[in-house]
Length: 133
Image 1 (spheres, rainbow, N blue to C red):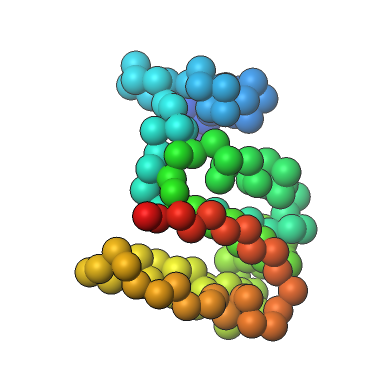
Image 2: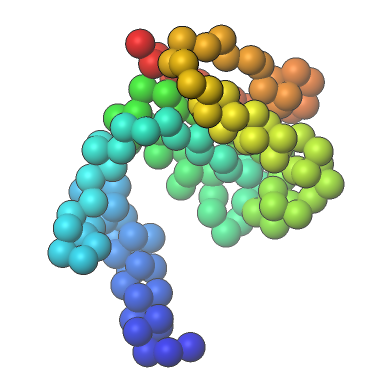
């Protein structure tokens, strides 16, 4: 791995993960401070409740930290790798993500929200904040 990649990885691990600077508004990229409150686009936060790499407690605050009116967290009953590669993820999670994205790809802002497949029968936590008025 090249030196700049190692330096970048070290900086991200220390500043973002250990010091939590992104959450505290004290992290900059290219000299520009990153302010999560400035994020106003629709946000889907997908997490796994058995994830040892990115624990659920680290993922959940994101929807509270952004200013998006249309934000949602899906907690999938899986591990980090299982969320990407398991049969259940391919059958249930990724179609739900695709549906969420597709619903926001409509030309009109006043469309009806369809229930996600995950809300229709598998054990998952969905936290919604859909006040796009």
